[in-house]
Amino acid sequence: MTGRKALWTTIGLGAVYLMRNKNARDKVMTQVRNISSSLRQRKSEAPGTTTGTTMNSTLR
Image 1 (cartoon, rainbow, N blue to C red):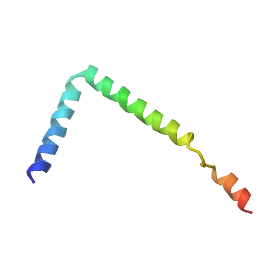
Image 2 (image 1 turned 30 degrees about the horizontal axis):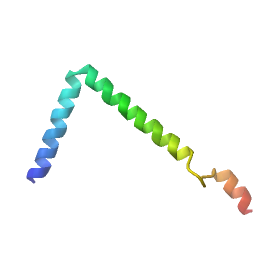
Image 3 (image 1 turned 180 degrees about the vertical axis):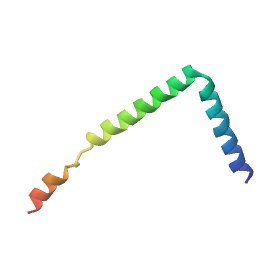
Image 4 (image 1 turned 135 degrees about the vertical axis):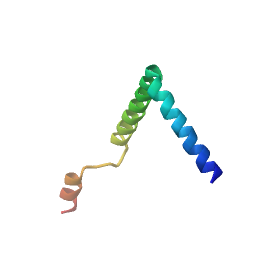
């Protein structure tokens, strides 16, 4: 229970810090956007991925 309480305290303090500091908030949002776009790009470049219509047409 103590670990969970410490975790929620840390999350709460981080949220308060980000609400009060625009520069920190903008930096975090930029990092999140960069990570999500790189994950999307990596997913689209993955070998062996096909769309459902191509897969269905080759199976028929």
